[in-house]
Length: 410
Image (cartoon, rainbow, N blue to C red; front, side, top):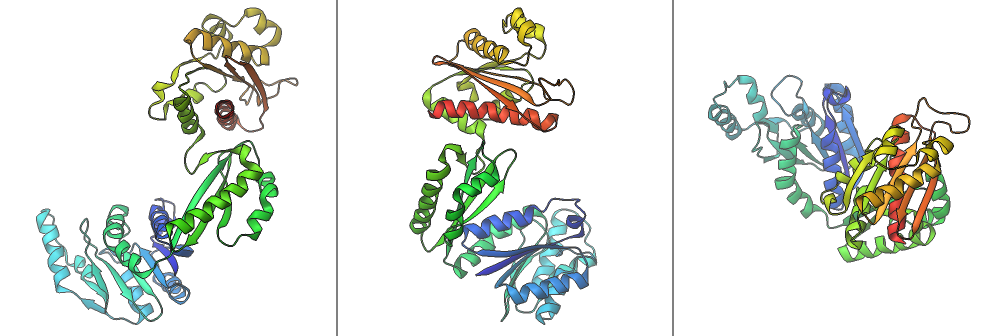
């Protein structure tokens, strides 16, 4: 069944608030096996609302609307749905009683304009709002079904989860599931080239390439009549993708590199120590953002100055004088020494030039060295980043975690 989501409110159009309702409803509809063809937002304007709702009625089976159900003059959803469907507004005395009790119970003055919320289109099924004053409703017509819910996210979610969801489950038996594969160290265009034929010849499941912050994601979406059927389709699609580009996959969905690295360190019972310069503790911050990181992170040293590198990390002064702070030699000593000092299985170091200043012809801004020390030796990697300071720091931390991931997976 084709669905459409419409969020109403000038405050959304102006960017005063985030459109969290649309995202929430979209996620829930997908879980329930519904196809979403359109998501739209319109301000509190009667003419534009009418045009959008009329169009939606003619192209969707179910239209879910949030916002515009309050008591003020710019709350127009009830009126516009009434006009679009030709169903006149009908006064519900039981709703007016609930409204008055709501205000009395909270010792708030009741004003007559609140009775506007007691008028609903003829034939509408009322969905009581247990957290607010504006009731939601379901209105079935010959062309489509309108489901109108309050715009307040807390109220909308309660009504959707406890009332609308049950209604939608009875209307549709299809199952849609998605799985997101996370890739790093490969560009979107190169990844697409590697698996282009797989993406093009599949109708179920379907694929979407998504650009993330310094990484790429592929969302696999399958549709079927059972969980087993859908899982089999997704598993087979993932297998084909892994055959072509599995070396770049590090995880799934919203699971970031720090969480994946943390899980691997825990599984392998390994510990790690950090020596950071240009990232200023960002690697440590990302690792410690994961619950349970105290099991595998011994600690870290932010050695921004050369003197701290000498005093705390025991980097040789001659190394710094001969090769500089940003060099493979310094990165190597930082990683090996922090591992020895903190008595850990792994030592990870990052040193570089984040910018915007500090670069030279030989070592331009974005030059970064990352070293990973273990009992099998020390590997040093050189990066040549091209972003601003914030981007260079983030990508340095991303690559540092990625090199740990690759080491642990081997």
